[in-house]
Amino acid sequence: TAIHKIAMDQINKFGQCGRLNKEDRSLFAIHNATAAKSALASYNFEEAQSYIDMAIKMLESDHWESQYSLSLELFEMSASVSCMHGNIAKSSPCLNEIICHVKAFDDSLMASSLL
Image 1: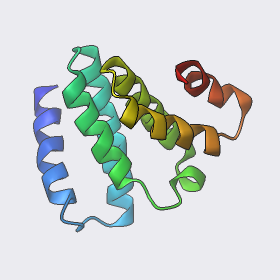
Image 2: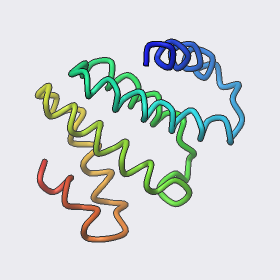
Image 3: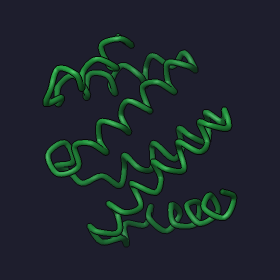
Image 4: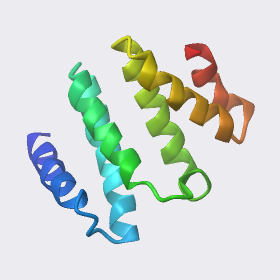
């Protein structure tokens, strides 16, 4: 919704200052992922990419261990949106990140299909 987007935009500005604790960063990474899905549903790929990028920045340093499902989802969305824009320079590192960290074969299928 519009209110959710406005709230996320404000939180993202605040979050860039590095003032969020671990729990808040995790929560806002999830909310950014939700905002990205909403933007994708509206075919607003640039906005979706900005939410995805912020969500990835908010992940913890060990996110592939502590936030595996969210990490996989975000990197898959980022790679997909980048591919739609023909931005191979951005999609390739995302895909490589996925391939290097997947825990199960099924988790690699999306990335493998985009390689």
